[in-house]
Length: 160
Length: 174
Image 1 (cartoon, chains in turn yellow, blue):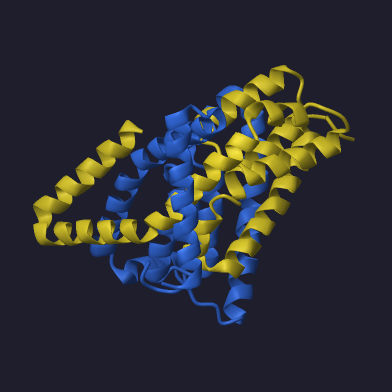
Image 2 (tube, rainbow over the protein chains, first blue to last red):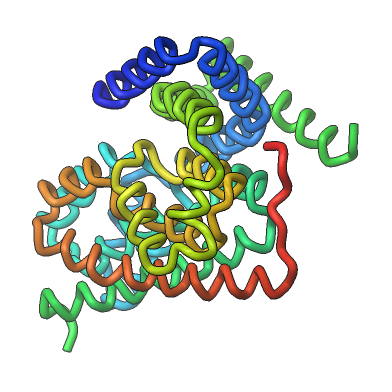
């Protein structure tokens, strides 16, 4: 995180020294773009708060650890798609689940869909790329996540 | 205001009133929702200002020809390679990748390259991958990267071609 601040600070400093007018224009562009997309961000945050309240970690853990492993993969990709978590929550949670005996392929389906499939980021993605591209990209990502889960299962000898 | 805008404003207002009311009367579910909202807002707004400042600098300093050359129609395979490498340095997540991809597109990057960038920035951000490997093991992360990156590139090429054939245009001005 600090790295981002350092890089941004340096970039602004260098830009300012070379051409302060251009730097001001960059700030103007940044503010304008940010304000324009802000409503979509707020919509997303509202959705995130409601969905994560309805689907807490406890519920996710329960579904990922039970029953048939292929059904567990499907559950994992479902929860990964409908929720949104920063890595600092998702990976420690996955680490705990792994110790509890949840399969690698299930965790793979969960983390990959969590990262790639964004039903909650839909308002933002749609604002930039439109409905069609957003829906297709998310469906392709879901398919990719399932392939990744399958390969993870094969490499860890959890299937076949 | 259009009807959808009115609906959106109304639901956001209802949400805000609900949260405030929940805190006032101590309604636990409402407070929990408010708490989650705050956690995620703080997390995102720590990244977003920097991301948008960098996007602003990118817009004023980087020439259209440069982006066209490295990410555009004639960039070939190198375009995808650059997209994946750039994705590796992206922070935050998809929500940062979208505005970056949008700026790249407006500077002349081709569709399949920006979709590669979006997909790759979901799965191969370097700090995140290191963090992942520390909890789930190096083998897990490597399998994920080696399987998903080629698939992301292939599916992006397909998606780019498909959308171009349909005469798809990303609206300017966001």
